[in-house]
Structure formats: structure tokens, C-alpha cells
Length: 256
Image (cartoon, rainbow, N blue to C red):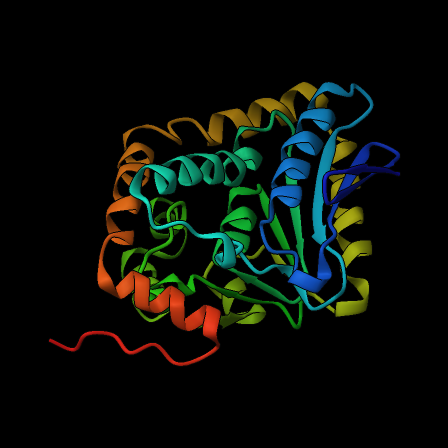
């Protein structure tokens, strides 16, 4: 097993397993986890032995809790640079040449949810919960804002983005977010079994299937999301929402 930043990289036959490993931070998208995701997916793509990649989270409580809010910077130029870097990580499973499966244990919130939906498939533990809670901070999800509507439909995407409430694994499956729901203690085994089935198919045909179905992803809508995010951080609601999160209190948004 290799340690890539804060991500453990393990080869199991034709499968690469990337385990996000900062459970004390609920596997939030820290610098170490962001670096490990990028390096791990790159390594898998360049290894002819690997056919499929599985991403999961260590600790059982969280797949990935999203952005490391404690390090947010309100300077618009710095915020834009951070957002460009974050989007590069969140879109990495889409850009990977080989199929990526997210095995989601516990919470997949914010950027963690976005990382999962950028994967080709999500296998969810029964205890998994999914949300885009950025609205509670006075901001919006960047990647999900341009992807979620295609998955769950426009109205449900608006509801999830405007309320920020989590959905459980079974509801996520009904909405088309999740491919299948499995018992918590069988999550990795089920994800690996599914990965093995994909790995047994013709290699080039599988990669071309991913490429064809993902055609057109990325483009102007991503640029608009990147340009819009720093603007939200200049508003008082975002400053209050993020301050409240850091201080572990309810936000007091302007009601005018």
C-alpha cells in the first residue's frame, strides 16, 4: 500500500482502491486528500494492470465531508484560485480514463457528494447520506450546480441546493444518484465485486463507453460556476454562514 498525501493507494488485482484517510476531519477535502485523489487517479490511469478504481473513506463515519471550511479565504482572487483547484479535484473522476466507483460510507456532503457524483458509479452503504448543504453557509455548490439537475431532474436539484437537507441511501437510489445500496459491513466487498465484473469486460470497450457517455461534460457551464463562486463570497450572508460554521452556532442571515 502507498501513502499519497492523505490517501492510501492499494492494488487489488485489477482494481486500485483509494481510501481517503483523515477520519478525524471526516475525510474533508484537505490539501493532503486533494493531492492524494489527483495522484491516485493519475497512477491508476497509467498502470496497465489497473482496469477500475474504487474510492472510499476511512473511519466509517464519512466518505468525505466536503471542503475544509476552516481554511476558506474571502479574498475574491484567492477564492477563485481555490475554487479552480477544487474543481480540478472534483472533476478528476470524470476525466479519468478508467471507470471510477465511489463506495460511500457515512456522509457525503458538499464536495464529498460532488466527488461521488463525478464517479461513474456510486455504491452506498445503508447508513450513507448525501447532501449539498452549502446554502446553509450562504454559498452554493460549484460542481453539483452544473451536474445534479442531469441526475435527479431540475426541480429536485433546486430543492436539494436551496434547502441543503440530506437524503438517505435508499432515496438517493430512487433518485438515480446511487446505483445500489448494500449493508454497511458489505460495502467494500460489494464495490470490489462490482469493479471485478467491469474489469472482466473488454478493456478498450469499457474505456470508450465511459468516454462516449461523458462527452460534452465540462465546457462553458463549468467556467460560469468558477467565475460565480468568488462573487458569492463577497456577500455578507457567506461571511456570516462560514463564521457561524466555524463558531458552531446557528447563522443569522439578513432577513431583508
